[in-house]
Length: 273
Image (cartoon, rainbow, N blue to C red; front, side, top):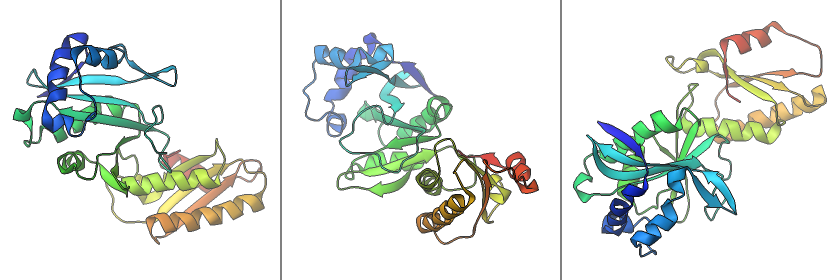
């Protein structure tokens, strides 16, 4: 059974041992020669639930991975946009956690523990608070990539050095990549505070196929502007997710024209944004 213990100062000697192991050091802080003092300097704030960034205390959740009560690795999560990564997370969703982890002991490598730990951590600690989770393993780190894939992550982008991988807990019947695209395109053409529902067959996780039916409530200033944005929205969304049938019901909230489909879409659909 896999469980998670909050990181404590008493774990630091074990962390030092793990961080010195070649299979960890190759991918985790490879340029740092850790001592017990430097482990404490870096991780002591983590035991209190935060990490400093740009002079501010930003929340971070740090845990020791345990298998049948034995400490086997380390995992942490945080809001993906709180800490600089050397590049911008472009067109990724707002509700996005980032996670980092390693299996510390060689004895527990290559037996599926990593992927099981990631999946359990997502379900118990990440998805109750975020819709998506992000990792960016280096391209050469094949073992990590396989573990993330087994835990439900999908590659959404390849950079020169790493893969961007995202996992999600589905609320509608769309792939993770298509869900991200839907959010990004919606935010490009509609206003902050505008709302989006998915209704029809795609709101049912147990069905197959079907059109993508969307209901949008917008506060755009005119019907003509809203119609123009709707057209651009559909065109770009098809470009991102493939040329499939997309039906959009648009409710321009500043105008008192109420259609029965509005209530149907809201009552039978799933609020997406």
